[in-house]
Length: 185
Image 1 (spheres, helix red, strand yellow):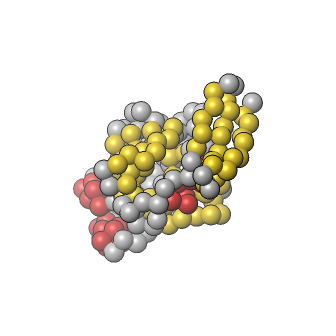
Image 2 (cartoon, one colour; image 1 turned 90 degrees about the horizontal axis):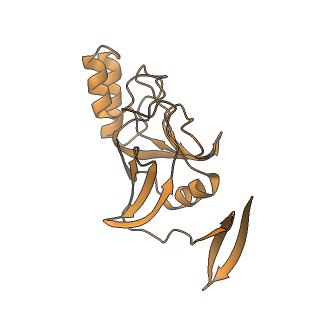
């Protein structure tokens, strides 16, 4: 049974979670000057950094076929590489979500070389990335990769990164559009 207690400590809201005798106190994420996310797929961890300083880390779930980087729509893999947050969705099917700029330039170039996407699609992806906009989301490379809620019990997403709802709320509130996201194996 999960029990949450809300305490007021030094003027800050503190969330205390009790998991079968284990108690963990969570403080809100501090204001950050240079927030960015680093996701380590093999460790199932999402880390928030402010510049070089580790601020917090979270357990995550990945796509249902977690090994390797995303190649095509429907493969169940979570992409690897460098991205940015292009949107914040407070109406997500999975509580809250941050949209990631996949496909990125590397995926677009690979997709065109392998004849998975057209030259026009490649160029549209590259232009969107250069302009820090949402890249085309409905391509044969896949798209609609988000960091969202919904739980971390197993790798269950179609390629997204999932957290428990309380933790995506912390991240959603602290991470701005444009923040860098690095996903490594």
